[in-house]
Length: 92
Image (cartoon, rainbow, N blue to C red; front, top):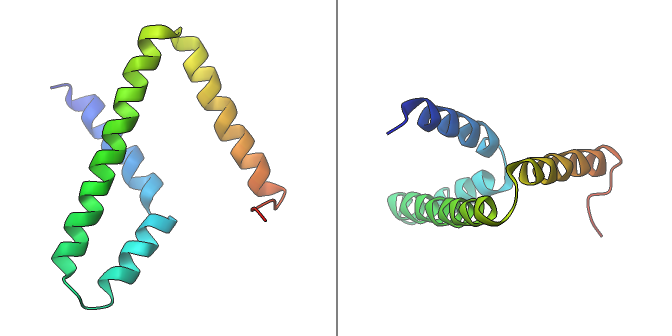
């Protein structure tokens, strides 16, 4: 196992998830007092499945597209999302 990649991935995902709507939804579900460990297990499993989909999509993209295209597209997506948020267009 490449531990540098492991810890880099852990750090980035952990920081990205702090305070996002998924964490707030999980906090809300856990605050109802109905099976906190069940809420934890469901949220953890959901993150695992979402991450598996992302890894599989990334592997497929690597197979069919040049890495530079994937990195450029991802960068453009994040810049576009940032500009959208800065302009205050948060949806309907």
